[in-house]
Amino acid sequence: MRTGTLGRSGVSVTELGLGTGPLGNLFTAVPDEQATACVDTAWDSGVRYFDTAPHYGIGLAERRLGAALRQRPRAEFTLSTKVGRLLEPVAEVTGDDLANGFAVPATHRRVWDFSADGVRRSIEDSLTRLGLERIDIAYLHDPDDHGPQALAEAYPALEKLRAEGVLGAIGAGMNQSALLTRFVRETDVDVVLLAGRYTLLDQGGLADLLPEAQRRGTGVVIGGAFNSGLLADPRPGATFEYSPASAELLDRALRIKAVCERHGVPLRAAALRFPLDHPAVRSVLVGARSAAEAADAAAMTAHPVPAELWQDLRAEGLLG
Image (cartoon, rainbow, N blue to C red; front, top):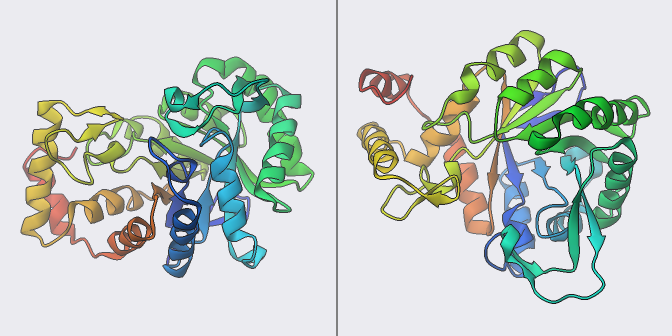
């Protein structure tokens, strides 16, 4: 599987990365053995980049990923997690975390913290949950409403941890491109994680972030290539950004699918290959909750996509 280096960091990622939101019991519970099989299958398929976050299942995804990777040679994989939400234990567990999207007991509450001390504590807590000796990449997680503090306090803390050798690469991740573009322009981040804004249905990141990242040599990781489901299986009831897709978006996705089928290419393969063809993009993260989904993501990433498919999409006004 093809790999790429993030900025000047020397940290490399495979073109397909495994996202572990689903392994934090996103929406529905995943048994431990199924989570382990998912990671194992991704590994057997050549994936060597694994992404997680404290937010995913109130730490469950980090614990499961660490357990699945702990027996692997540490030099052979790249691990990223995120900072910005600290997990504080609650005095009494009275319900679940489904209000935040995760089918786990609400044992902790999330506390936004983009202070320097919060960043260091978050890294220490993540290392404990992972049970690993180091984290390769740390992203500022969804600092949308905390931009000034993230830039003034959290980013310098990450930069210091990188200088100390605690982290190999640093960056920020969110589902908008404007603030990420500021990070690329105003800081020395190695990588940015852009979710849902550079896909077959939404190329918003092309207006600002991707050209700037390419100019500065900053690595880009793309999340949400399926826009939460519509580009994986466009049908009535399919979701776009975790809400039911509009009739207009569904029609557009179905038209894209029809063009793909004319070329003998699954829509999922085109959806994954499209962002990878941009010169600034180093990896696409795909969330999976089973071995079958992990295997499918690898197969779709490897599926050839002819240049004529993109030409036809542009000719039909389906791609900018």
